[in-house]
Image (cartoon, rainbow, N blue to C red):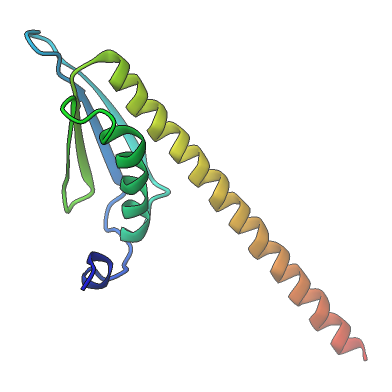
Length: 127
């Protein structure tokens, strides 16, 4: 049984919130950045996000990045360098922008389909 078969395909209770912590070894200070990913609304979309994140960011930087995903939608990512911090933020921001564009395209398609259904329904009524 695969993971996707075990987890119900439900909406998330909370939006996905990512806290990115820069923790440079031998440094007494750390930095934090936060991102809310409101467009990730289902477990499937979160899985897709982390599949892409692992492939493009986490695996190539193994040993320099750690992350934990909580059941409440909180994700903590810890990196050990500024370049990696910037790469993680860039990935998150680009992914969110793509999701926003994708959702906007879906909404436009749905509106177009509704218009077509309305116009075809009106034509039938005229006959």
